[in-house]
View 1 (tube, one colour):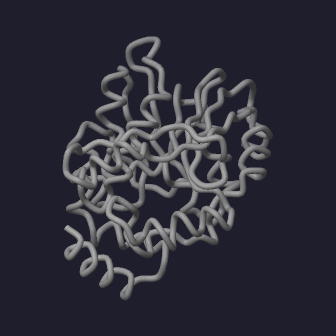
View 2: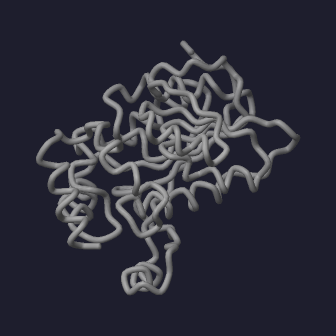
Amino acid sequence: MDDVRNSVSGCTAALRPRNDPGQYDDLAEHWWNPRGYFAMLHWLAQARGALIPPAAAPGELLVDLGCGAGLLAPHVAARGYRHVGVDLTASALAQAAAHGVDAVRADVTAVPLADRCADVVVAGEILEHVADLPTALTQACRLLRPGGLLVIDTLAATALARFVAVRLAERVPGGPPPGIHDPALFVDRSVLLRECARHGVPLRLRGIRPSLVDLTRWLTGRTDSVRMVPVPTTAVLFQGIGRRTGPAAGG
């Protein structure tokens, strides 16, 4: 796998600028491979799914912003939601639809869904890819019904995150393909907390990382799954969760 990783990702990095959405088309066949280029996205989808409670009633709606190929779908289906996924990449959306996701091709800064339509909004590994973070957060919050749940995971705008997620992780199996992230877009946690609170969604943050035991087993081919475990710092990879407490300001 390492030889394939080096040749394909090296070609991708050479041909496209960082954070170019076309990379997802280049690597489209890897989405559902638990040992491929998007392996860590599988691990994060499982961790994200663990924060989503079972639907309280049939037909409750979960909106998955930046859904990719629908890796969250098995976790959403197990909890009883209708799953709507929003993404810009048509090749990924086709795979999401094949896994039961109602696919909507759109930018997460301009989501063509009604205000307060969702019981849960998920924004997993997408906020660090958008140039206009406040607008993306406005969209996420406006979709939530009062009492609705927002679940995110993303990368922090810190020197440590830039080192770990770009210089280190892009060079190891299981890490992101080279060039998939632009560290200039990593998320300022103070902006994230302020904007969500302004729209009536106070967030709690916690840091996470792959289990070192599971990662060792994954690297040696003894498992296809790696648990994400909590860490005391949010300075690299972190989750956020919060409920909408009132009407959105300026939504």
